[in-house]
Image (cartoon, rainbow, N blue to C red; front, top):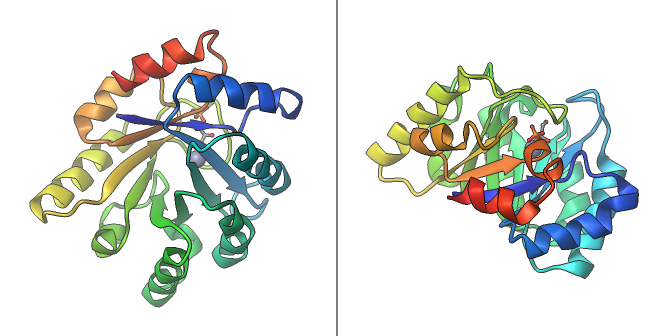
Length: 217
Ligand code: DX5
Ligand code: ZN
C-alpha cells in the first residue's frame, strides 16, 4: 500500500519542519487538499499553494493534488506549475460527460489524472472513465475537512471498483481518502485499495516513520 500524507491540518509555522520529518519518514506522496470555499466550505487555496511551492524546493517526493473545487481548470492552471504527479478532480463538480472528457485530456497535458467520488456518488458514475484515467479516488469521508471518521459504507464501493477494474483488465489505481488509520488500513487494503491518504493519523502521531511504516505494511 502506498501512503499519501495529507497536509490539510499542518500548521504553517510548523510546515517546513513537518515536510522534512515526513520526507525522512518516507511518505510516498504529499497530498495537497485544494478547497475553493464553493465546492466545500473551507478555502485552502493560498495555504496549499504556499505548501506546494515550498515542497518543490525541499523534496523530490511527488505531489498528489486533490481538487475540491467547482472550477477545475482554474486550479489545474494554478497547481500544474508545481509539476504534480497526479491531479484529481471531483466528478460531482462536472455537468456532463463531455466536460469530464475535456478535463481528463486537459490535465493529461501536465500530469497523471484522477477522478474522485464523494460517499453518496454511485461507483457506476465513473466506470466509463476508468480506462482513461490513472486513478480513482474513493472518498471515505465527506470532502471538506480532515479529522473525520471513515464512513463504513464506502468500503463496499472500493470492492465494487476493484472487481470492475480486475474483470476488465484495467490498470487504474484505487486511492482512498479520509479517516484512514492503523485500525482500518488492513480492511482498506483487503477491499482493493492501492494508495491510502492519511492526514490526522500521521500528523498527530509522535513518530512519523513508525506510523507510515505501519500503514504501509
Ligand atoms: C478531506 C480531504 C482528506 C483529508 C484526510 O476533504 O480530502 O485528504 O484531509 O485527512 P484525515 O486523514 O484526517 O481524514
Ligand atoms: Zn484529499
